[in-house]
Image (cartoon, rainbow, N blue to C red; front, side, top):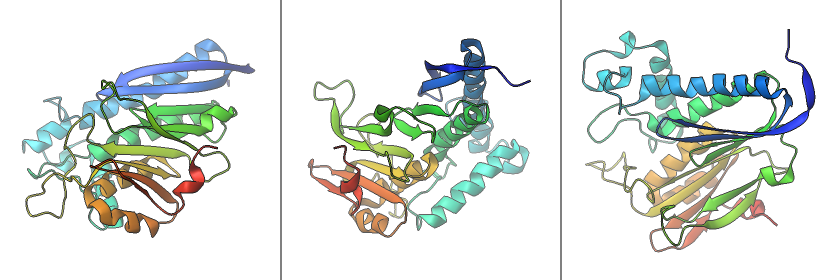
Length: 269
C-alpha cells in the first residue's frame, strides 16, 4: 500500500555522513512520519557508501585495497562499478579527472560523494517526494518538481574558508527555465591544495585557480568537471566551452574571474 498523500508540507533533514553535511529541503505530500522514514532510508545509502569507500576508515574495503590486502574483484561489486565509472570519466575529461593519487592509491572521492547523493535523491524521488533540493556538502541538486522560485537559485561562495571574516556569497545563479539541475564547486579554501594535476610529472597540486564552480544537468557531471577543470587550469575555460550542457565560473588565485560563454545567462536577475 502506498503512503497516504496530504497537502504538501515543508521539511528539512540534515545528515552528517562521508565527512560532511547533507541537507534535504523541500515540501512533501506524505505524512511527517512517512517523510522521515524515507529520508532516513535515503541517508542510509550515504552511510553505506562511506563504509565502503572511506579511506579514513581503516577496515573499509577501499582502505584494504589501498594497503594491498584485497583486490577489486574481492571487494563489494559497487567498487568495480565506481572503478569503471572513474575510468570512463577520465576518458571523457581527456585525462584531467583521475581517481589515482600521486601515491598511486585509488581514491574516487572526487566522484563518490555526489554519486551517493544522487542515489539517495533518486530513492526519495521514487517514493513520491519530488519537490526538494539536496545540498551535499556545498554541491547542490534541484529536483524537477521544485515549486518555490527561491529553490531554483544557488549561491556561489567566495573562495575563502567559511570561518573567514570575509566569507559570504560571491554571486547567485538562477536555474529556473534552464536544462540545468546541479552545481558543484572545487576549490582550495577549505581543504588546501588537495587537487592534483594528473598530467604533471610529479602530479603536483593544481594552483592556477582557487575555485571552479560547474553547472550541469546532473550532480556527478558537475562534480567531475569541477575537479577536472580545476586540475587543468586556465586551458579548461575553452575546454568546457566545447562541452555540451556545461557552464562554469572560475576564480583565479589573484581573485580575477572568468567563465564559459553561456554562464552570463545564469546570473540571477
